[in-house]
Image (cartoon, rainbow, N blue to C red; front, side):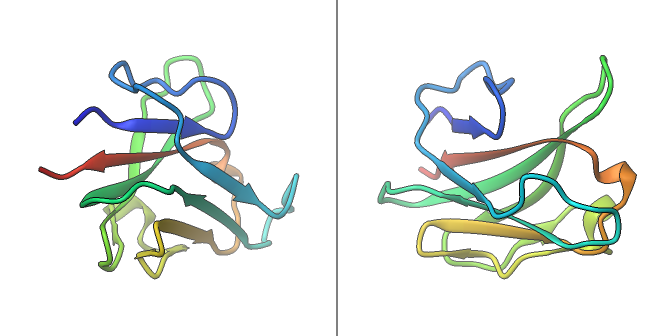
Length: 119
């Protein structure tokens, strides 16, 4: 099926997004360099699915980067660029949380959560 998407701010850059299904929780409105930050995304749909977190770096022509994916009930698989300071225990109870340890200026950007139904 088409991915359902939500974003922390505004509309997500996914042309096939059909509806907003997610709840994103952030405990801090801002974060200091060196702190930790946890992003949590959850949904209420049943079925078999994969959840994703994407990052869109700051900049006019910045392209979307896949951060992590997790098939329903499995551990998280991080992309190489995010393995050192990003952590997740995978999908649990329709939720995928990501913690960024020792936040750097280069972590700046917009983070998007997405869910893809698995056929």
